[in-house]
Image 1: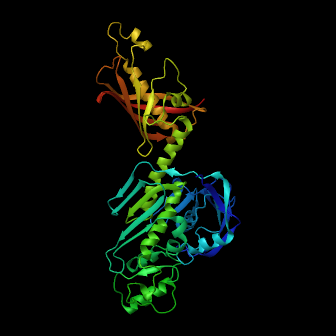
Image 2: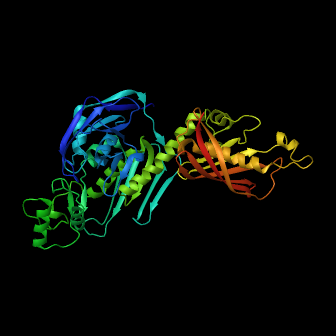
Image 3: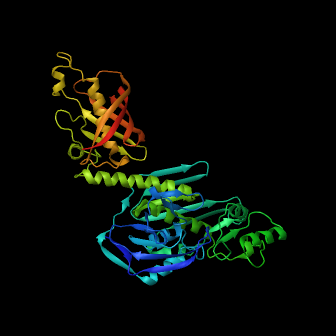
Length: 466
């Protein structure tokens, strides 16, 4: 069944102050055309600069997610994006007259209610899903975070958090259906922080708009009445602060028994929106945070870019090739007798690595003279085969358009030839991207026959206009 993209029926606005900046801001959700995705617009800045909601534009993810282009910043975008993802909206122009969306009650609910009041309409273009067909793993040992995206026919998210304080401890939550559960079970979950973190955040000039109406403060250490009074003064909170008996400052009631875990899932939804496409996968996360969410989104985004690249050139799907010879001919300018790669079998954008092979036959024209009676593939052509494989790797890393540019190799270093390559061999080439400086790149290539290294070299190339 084909699913179609969605956008807002009409504009919807929410006003308030930012959690960290403490400054007033109005965010307006505008309808947007098909295939435009989410785009933030700073209407208070001359020229109204736009920032696509993609992980490539993340400039800070320490305690919130910040997008930036040049000197323009938009802080704390995760709740806005979570509202759009949760309501299964594909295209939206998000206009702000300040640097940080309003925090509201600390959840995504104010944005959700405004969007639902404005209405949602279906568009004519089909929705483009990223179908995760292989496990994507991410681990941050320093933060104790483990994340994985597993193949699944639908979109599911499971989150576990673990804090060394009785008020939080270990909590678990799972979202099985955006359509059925998001609005009521996850959008209302409010942001939270530990009491021990509050003073440090104030010292850093953050949470200037924070108060007990837009955040849940978990009591994880004792404070004297005098210390609580000083904390209230520094936060600009009028009235009494007390430690309470339920583990939450001032005994504030929770909306859900596991509200902190649900809010972590909400944050994860917003950060994963930066992949730029809805997912079909089961996301499982233990102890996630914005920094790990963003790095995980970056890995998933690379898989999406890889699939888009393959889709562009590979006409007939193949289980044995990323690019078959027909796709290679669409990309490479080389032709007989100088096209020296037959197939690409692995294209790993995450690790900037490509694997291809060349079938070496006695019909190669160079065997007539190298050498008569004892045919051996010239070492310079093995290097050329690795270089051509490396050209294919540069398609995404340098955003190359094969119709507009050529790759000229300008240097070969550390070349070594370990064994001769003869007719009947299958030459496997593994090439990695090492470094880029302006329009010059450095690659590392290795060639194998039957698993044995036969040649290796570092290759320097320049990108030039055709």
